[in-house]
View (cartoon, rainbow, N blue to C red):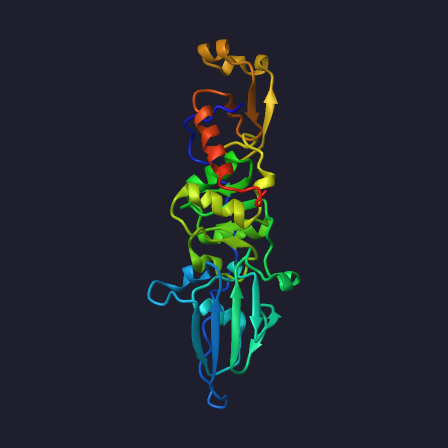
Length: 285
């Protein structure tokens, strides 16, 4: 199996043309010919995480002077649209384009907490397997690659590059920058709640229902390309003397050519993997 030794920084992808992006929509200006109305928003599950310490409560009121899309009202509270899986306006499911024109009660649900009677009205994809992570999630990227998932990552990438690659390659965006998640071009994404990489890994696996798709030690931790078995005779000139003596099974990255085997780091990585698996009960599988 793979020897996960000390790795070089992740390889950069080719520079791509910047994407012309729209900034998050601001709340509309007042209009003198529209009667004011009030929207009461109730955020379910863990969505209050985005509301800020001073206003972190389930229900928020917004006074509006002009008809406004429900997406803009939700994001004005700090909740990115990729985190929202169901919207009910006065008990009826709507999409992000729905226009609010009068007093209304709005219930907002995250992925995984949709009432069973509205399972056909979900707004998010729950089973993405290809991702792109921002530069602050390097350890999460390594953990997910260890589990066999395709994670594009460049610690030097700017926001425009991240969004461009995300759109071109149809990847889900992983970032703790909520403003980045609010860009209109983002279709699928997730903001890890924890700052701990191990807990972030559990969150992502649960959010995208990835447990059954785990295929450990099949992807290069350095460049993200798949690994393939290789005969010892084909790589023997690249091996250290003791490695030649004690190991017989090897894998080689199809991208950067890195050689992996079950060396001294393997047992520690296997322990980390088992720790991740233990986080899921049989109902998660």
